Length: 128
Image (tube, rainbow, N blue to C red):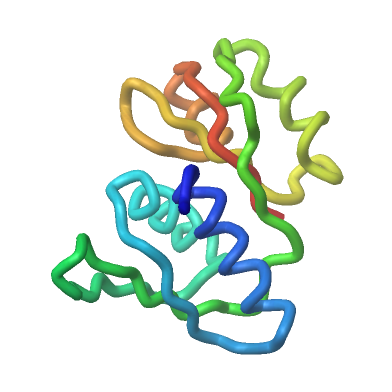
């Protein structure tokens, strides 16, 4: 019984990379698609494709071998636009290493794009 599809997706990607495979499959949702697009922009993953199986679909993700750790942030903390740096220090290992993934009123984005657009939101997860 699944409760958090995003946590399952991060776990699948992390475990697949650790055993040395380059392709994984995970359940599809709009939230996971947005997170995968952010990860693809930062070259943590390669291409991904939607596979329709009649039950909502799945994503087939081609991994790039660059993920050391990725996880969701629970509870989904609210972040003001001026506090993003404090959350970077809390969840990322060093300055300019990794990304925080946020959901904002302007879509799903990383912390640098949120700072540039001057928006806050809720933390979804981190990747480095």
